[in-house]
Image (cartoon, rainbow, N blue to C red; front, side, top):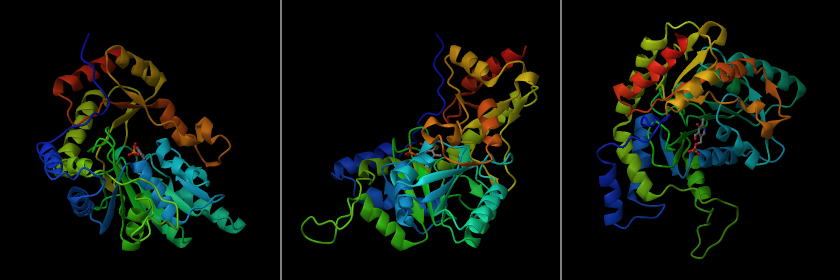
Amino acid sequence: MPKQILLSTPHMGDSELEFVKEAFDTNWIAPVGPHVDAFEQEFCQVVGTSHAAALSSGTAALHLALRLIGIEPGDEVFCSTLTFIATASPITYLGAKPIFIDSDRTSWNMNPDLLQEALDHRAKTGKLPKAVVLVHLYGQSADIDAILEICNYYNIPLIEDAAEALGATYKGRSPGTFGKIGIYSFNGNKIITTSGGGMLVSEAPDLVAKARFLATQARDPAPHYQHSEIGYNYRLSNVLAGIGRGQLQVLRDRVNARRHNFEVYQQALGRLPGIEFMPEAAFGRSTRWLTCLTIDPKAFGCDREQVRLALAEQQIEARPVWKPLHLQPVFAGCECIGGEVAEYLFETGLCLPSGSNLTPEELERVIEVVKGLKN
Ligand SMILES: Cc1ncc(COP(=O)(O)O)c(C=O)c1O
């Protein structure tokens, strides 16, 4: 049986273990400590922002972001439809309702024209959403300036879900640092990982201070335990923050390795009929967190699912592109503006193994299976 090739696995560098050992040696094993503080500061430098709060997950960061913006039961929040469910589920934690927006073909991310149309229409009927949650998918930034301009015009706060886009650029800056609040994920499959973790960033110090407060059970400044509002247990462990500090040191290498995977796949498979690789929008540099392509079954001879199953038979994990959220049973009944582009990308899109630790032989094994289906 050939060795299994997984979609995206953790890839440790040389110094993570030293940071973890330091946490053990100094007995900072709690969700507080010097690694947490240093990780936040170093992260700010890497993405170019002023304030950051290290949290237990990207989902927790999104939940706090929406809470900080004041989302309440009954509110509506506009949200990208082509994404992982965690972009939208925190909207429902707060009793609010997501309204989904389709992608464009250039970036696979939220289509600014559709957002404009939808907000113009809502403005006329006096029902503007309370926030917009914008995802940067598969390591590629959305067209942030266009989206921010529309949001600013209507005075609607933008939350950026950059869980998959750490290390990417938009016009030279990091996606996640443009909106009112941005979030990142250090889940095990992400470009760098703390095994599980997330970061909330903002230029507003009061928002980040409030995020830390809410993430530690919203404890009032009193010698006893006193609480005037409900909080959460969302802070990142000092041990895991140590892993994060080590991972930040190798972020650039990890981006380069993933971009290299993409180039190898594209060179080998890009000219096959019916295969189209996810484009890189002109406004930024993608990390190519996952190498994604679409397969036109008529031109290629078999469809995305047949390719996925053929890979699985050879112990190779590939995954369909995210199923759009407006098609998810749990969001049945939620409105979606457009939807055809996301549906097409889901029906035809496949993510190939993309870890920064893949060997040339492993890449070749994937390529041979896909090529073999064409013969
Ligand atoms: C787009 C997107 N948003 C949010 C998340 C949630 O992050 P976490 O798994 O750290 O909660 C993920 C990944 O898991 C993601 O891919």
